[in-house]
Length: 416
Image 1: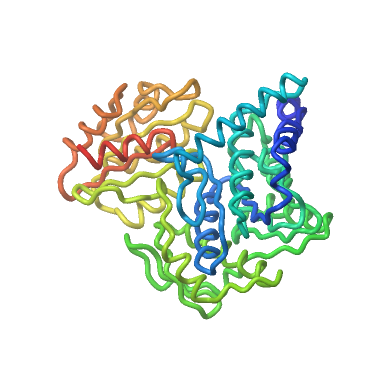
Image 2: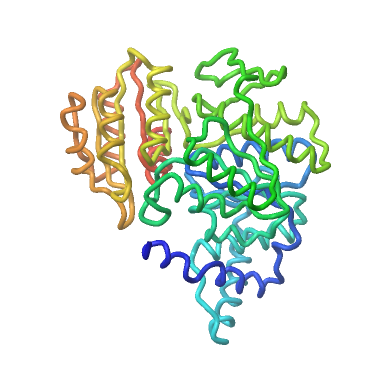
């Protein structure tokens, strides 16, 4: 338990202090707050797209990014400008220096970025901000938002156990920290029962109404590389994001729409349909090149890798796959790497950036015995070059394992 108390001990005091210096902009906004282990980003993007289509001025805050840091802070689908980001960062730096000179606390990088985003969205007079949690929920910097919003809990599974807990119940309790009296709560269908019990209990204790999709009213019409067509509650929708898990995310979004409608907001069906159909979300089963077919996916924990592998089995059965894979050493790499490797003709290990990165040799060694070819590369460029050399015109190149590698690999694949 000590490991979690060290995270909790400062609570939300640092970001609260910083936002106070900025005039408490969080108090001027309405939030749709999204927590969960997997699916947060896609759910956030689809929800923001619907609100934009319905004419609401919409802020979107996500993490991490794939290619450009500014992806994290978007207004009506457009990234914050470089000039605006630079100006606000300079202003926040001055605020922090004055704060610390007066005996205040040094905020973390994530707290600074979160405060900057909320300040920007407030100044831009957003009607809604769709806010993705960074880690956990209860003590995440984004949980500085006031009560009375909509709290969305996406799929919960085992991840960040050293911080959030060793059981689904413990992890779910941290995620449910965003559920507060006066809000409405939404969760996905198919949640593990252990996690679902915590969600239900939290809603009962806080007097919060819970919205959850009715899987019995879902019909999958078609699935292909262009996305999935579904019928839900008698209405037809196209989901452009690949994978069965994106159906689950879309249904969660549809229940979020119902919660908004019950709160008095007008969201016409056509805006819902077009908002989902126009969603683009990089780094999640994203096709980045056609010949050979190249896909990037930021699956970085065991549950996400299983979802990725299910998509590989569905869409690429019988096709030869060349994987480029890099992971963080604090993830379940000994589970994740073999799951991918056994579906591949070759797996090329790379090292992600940073102190937490698993070295390329360990990636390749962990894959050894599960596919015919395993090699390690210190250079992303060399790995991409080898993948392109190994792949025939009908083969598939897959880059996966961590969001910290796929952005660089995406650019290399598109330009090699």
